Amino acid sequence: MKSKNYPPGFDVQAAWDRHSREWDQATISNDKLFGLVMGQAKYCHELLRRSLPEERIAKLRKVEAQHQVMTGVNQRTVRFDVYTEDQRGRAFDVEMQVANEGDLPHRMRYYQAMMEYDHLRPREGYRQLAAVPTYVIFYCDFDYYGRGAAMYRFENYERKLKLTMGDDRSLIVFNAKSREFGDRKQLKTFLDLMHGHVDTEDKYIVQVANEVSRLKADEQLKEAYVMDNVDLEFKMYEQSEKIRAEEKQKYGFAIIKELIKQGQSKEKATNFLIQTMGMSKTEADAYYQEAIAG
Image (cartoon, rainbow, N blue to C red):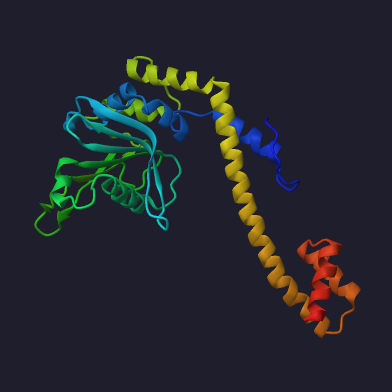
């Protein structure tokens, strides 16, 4: 483990061990591994071919893992797991999503908007977008819509007449929990792979599983992954500590002022803060002095 200057309150060893185990146990459903594997055209192309056979994707001309869309200063940026374009100019955002955070439709809406952001230059007409049909695709380890389908595909249409809008946008959700695959039986083996099940009779799945194993065995990749996640966990720790400190300050002053108002001695007032709010004696004394000064 590389040493870094973390504060004593943050258990860096525990965080390091946790994320190290996470890497060792990871499958293709790990978004880092998913990006590294599907960032390679041969794997990404076959996955899209199996997922969307009706689109007849013959060849990919561009594949990028962790593709970032640069937005305005006050806008939320987006980093796609895998962004690719095919020989016909169609654009695909391919995402792995394990945790159901309850915001999938709106996340897809924003990702779709960011794809458009990347394709229209100043003073270009809106008809330019007709040359770039877009597909936002999520492989989910949960059934967000609860209907048991392996695939949910959404497009804009007029509700009464069932008239397609014709804006060339598709939002597609694959459900790894499904057992109803219809004409997409080749996709089942990939969704099973998300749970670590390798169909040894499927050459593509074996290749993907082997590539995942190869990447996991790379110590430099593992170390980078663990360090990134430890740093992220530390940032979350810092934020929670900041909130806790702000709450401590807010309620600490209110409590000690009330105790002073009640005529409690300095010793009793500061001991109360130490016992109930986990303050040190130095902190409690400082709160007391500032309270009586104010």
